[in-house]
Image (cartoon, rainbow, N blue to C red; front, side, top):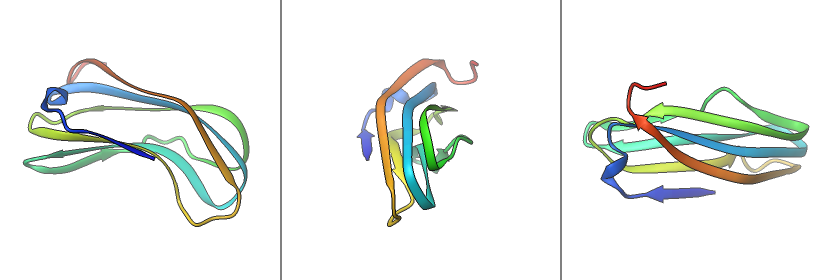
Length: 104
């Protein structure tokens, strides 16, 4: 699933994507969340380091990143590598602006 935000106000901000993921018999694949930024200087991305596969109970995945100053689109992905046998569930996804870029 992907949600595209065509909004320049994300430029030069720190954002956090959070979602809950559950997998059931997911084989030869993994589920994850990812943020892409599209700007005049190119594409930037951050997928974090939480990977869900096999059979796993609900777990929270989080990605934070600084959005480059020339960004005009933000793409938020709740994803898995397909095709693959098994099931993936996503729930309670949220995107938050934490403040100016460079803040932790």
